[in-house]
Image 1 (cartoon, rainbow, N blue to C red):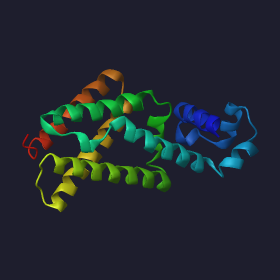
Image 2: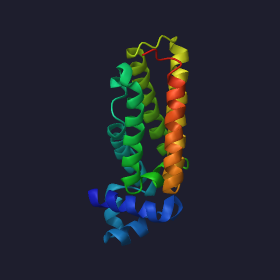
Image 3: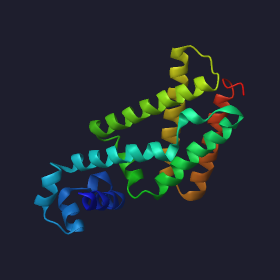
Image 4: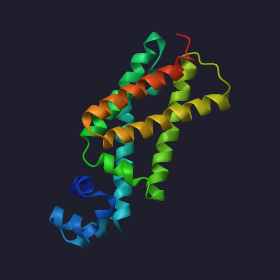
Length: 185
């Protein structure tokens, strides 16, 4: 199964979600299609398994949003964005998997769950930094931060390196500009 998921990531990167299928996966992995169906009933089940694994990795790439405290919070923004972006860029098939999340309710649900977890962590981290917004406003600020970061990083992952670097730098400025209105450290 590990090998199938690794080859799936490579295949997804090479052919995209529309070209990805179990027959091509079996050919690339050097196994019969029945071997794939022993673990996965269809291509979407494979992509869901890949997305679940990626969701765990994403959290490690970003780091702990609850520990970005003190006067070093701006550096924490840089670490979180850089950690995610650099790891995502190196992870085979990840950008294609993110793009596929638009085409599948199951993948979209995983993405929404992870985004909500990140929003909750960010809200707790901002409370630790002394942000005193009411709960609803804090929820909206965290939603804006996570969704903006997700979208711009997805675009960066699909861009040529020089444009991607500029986009990541602008994302950091956007986030710091927003947060400095609320963080008084």
